[in-house]
Length: 408
Image 1 (cartoon, rainbow, N blue to C red):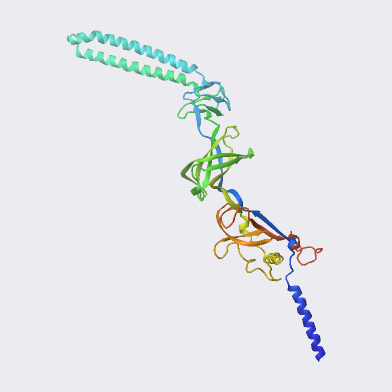
Image 2 (image 1 turned 180 degrees about the vertical axis):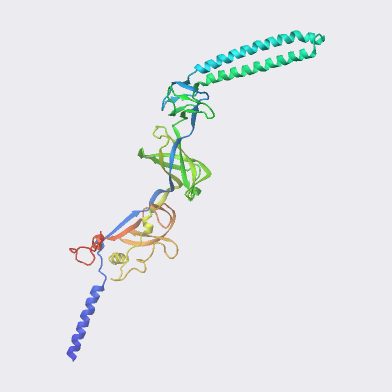
């Protein structure tokens, strides 16, 4: 019986020792731990609002005609550069010239009638003063004279109108600029009735253009006049153009219950690369800080793995820690500490430790450090076991057996 008891105790000891060996965390050699770091350094950081817009000329004038007729000659074409007062086109003047001659004849006739009535009145007025003619006859003379004056004035006005219409047959440019659109051809008939037909569209100056963009109501509160803008167009995807916000329009646009507001961005175009109608992808710098201490935003999200942290720190000479014991609460410390301060992990030589920092501007790429770090300090971005991804793809131990369905 005593021998049987000794055997049972021995078996229990073997089981306990085996369990301890199995359950004991396997130490990860420090050489197998990959730590990626970055230095806190001076840099620039900004917050941007993104949108799209359409390029357009700042001033666009539609040139039309106020007279009807056949387009006799065109002197410009698409993309022609024109000066103010330059002749663009000519409407056939045959009918207009005939109307002018007719009105001139009517004017001459009215002038002759007026002269006759005025002479008659001048002869009869003294006789009327001496009461040598009846009052009825004199009243008729006055009526005829006034009627002749009215006819003459009417003929003169018609003649002036016909003369102006003849001048309107010559179409001149009202501004300096470039012809964007030509809507007529030689021989085409244009009819000027209630609406003035458009012959040309002229842009004032394509070296200075503008972008009209719609901004979501959630972002419009950040937009102010004078803010710096960068934008690209599909025609030159590698070229970044610059401009600034010049106008914010308060009139809302509602599309499918989405409210947007229009802003205007100036777009210098000295090389004539930008063209009206191009779509611009814009970035508005609503807040910028330069030459400030920054770290990658990834450092704020880093939280070390308990096992790797324990293995790494237990193999460092400073601080010495009993094997199998983790640093007090450090491995589970979240980026946002209980005190409310944001924590980053700093590597100094072979030692790593958390440091509370105060964060300013953060654009999800870099974060501004207001306090807690100095320029040149190394912050940890990641801590991984080398080959961990390969091991994770082969759960179960045997590397020669296929992984579970859906594994990548």
